[in-house]
Length: 500
Image (cartoon, rainbow, N blue to C red; front, side, top):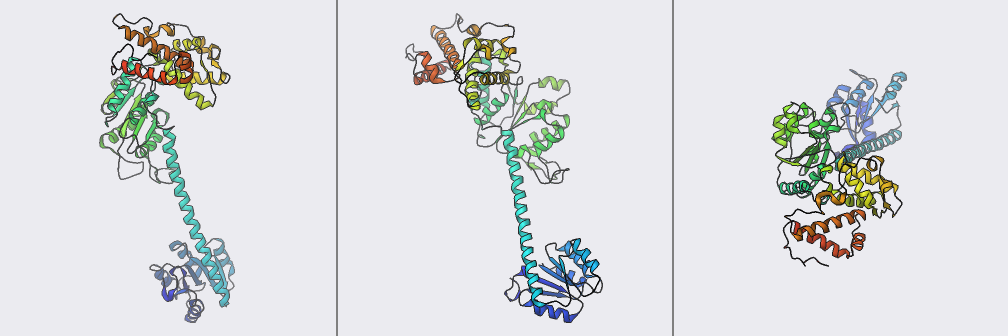
């Protein structure tokens, strides 16, 4: 509060070199506002070093500096102050120019009417309040916009909700080993390197590690290092400060900060430039980052999982990848085999993919015919699981609702490909177990193959598969559980334990 109970934001500063004019203004305005006075521009500016004023009234003709010159300085020092000029002379041209240039809001000619002057100041104060409120709202909206951009940046790399280990399926030895390693390393903070051809499911393994780790409640953030230029990659990973470069209008967090408390997945890490490798090495070693344009470092708490389709050891030998960084990120390597080396997993993958594709397309598919499944299993799929997903999505679009995917729905490259491998029925030698297998092992292998195939043909629909197998849905689930536990050595081989 100001003097006499008046609000401090209603302070009015009057500036004139005539004492009688100052006395008159103080009497006129003192009933409504807190009034400060000064006899020239220099004295008024000195007063403003310790006072915040809402309105400034200045005479045009004053010693030292004119009213327009004085109000220009006021605009610099206190831009929110409403600036009004008194003039009793005819040089209106310079005054109008000052109005047009924004140095003053309006001018009042002498002599003035006390009631009119009071009303003008009241309107000026109201305009000032609205201006300040509008600026406050604008700043709040700008801050909210930046927060939304930051959240979007995090979500853009999260793609979809975190997936559990079921995203990686397979019963082939190499896949089982990869899953086993992923589950063993998950509880720790050890840095993991997943390597394998493009499309083999490296990101799924990374998500599985994250989902099974103590960091599961944190964010899983993924970025493809080969898809972003070096300059942008540095900003994406480490963030930047306002003014760091053209267009940097506000501070922005990088993915290391966004992933704090969670997992950062660097896909195709071998595609990083040497300069970026140096910066990544420091972040991994010191657990700190320096945003672009920043002076101070920012501590980070991130679990790092990297992936590449290259042989990183060969990249090190060729001088394209730093040896010190290689040893930092490959503490715990996990290899994923290409799809052509795990043909026995094809029925399981087809069942899972068809189930997801139906949800994505909003279209029900009855399943896949055995002939089409055989062709899919015998095609090498150089694009691996990603290519298989595209193939099944294409076929699901072509098939009629509730129809069966047949050979005619497959792409030419799949149905016309040379058949260089045995039919699916013989894949993995399920029909001719090794002589060292027990009768129970042989029966389990045969039953599991039949169930996998029927599930695939039914598009992953467990109820439909159970009906074709002559089981109830619950009976099928129990059968699968028994087979899985016995294969893992967790269930005795009681010949009658799983009969329906």
